[in-house]
Length: 273
Image 1 (cartoon, rainbow, N blue to C red):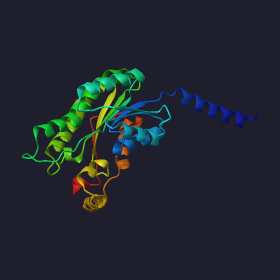
Image 2 (cartoon, rainbow, N blue to C red):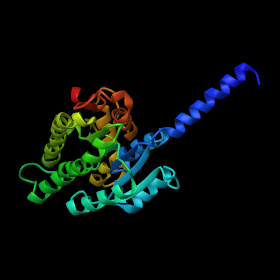
Image 3 (cartoon, rainbow, N blue to C red):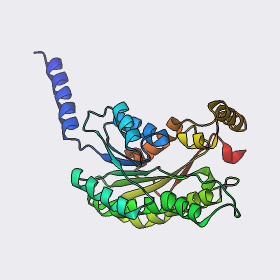
């Protein structure tokens, strides 16, 4: 074997050894069965992360896991109702029993109730706060100690909305809950930095997700809505889940290891309009 061939062999062997010894990072994604959560999972699986998909609909989660290569040990699912603290506690216990350590948490799940001051019931208000704010808070609280013990530190990414900065029309509870997510991010970033845990926030604008299907009677009506809203934006189109997933992936990456308490708007220029 020539010297150049030996050198090449050692380089390949070294790369294989590094890859083998590299600890796989586990990331939990709420609302991971579709939309932004699923697209984020797709990006992370390609980067060799281990993914836990969390949601209320088991069938949807199972379908998402199959699409991500569900036979692999890199993807697992757990059902959980973020409106129920007992469900959250039970789910956290299951995850901690099957995973040695959590590196990342993406709080993506959310509800979008419509209504202004005279149309928003106490129940609607409570659901928005429970799912959009309290659920993420409880998950962060539950996993904080384990993240603090992780030699690689931890990454928390909260998905808020441009409505958390510029309130949406006739979406009082939603807008207030998303504003709370922005401030929760900043507050926790100040507290958790000492444990090498970063906490950042992504604020999407109008994105093509199943969330909007609920409020339109037909596919053609929905597409008209998307076209109209897209035309009003500087970039001339609505967002795709993959547009937001890239921002989430950045905050989870080593490139963002010195970034915390930040809010990244991904909206095609909506806040400029």
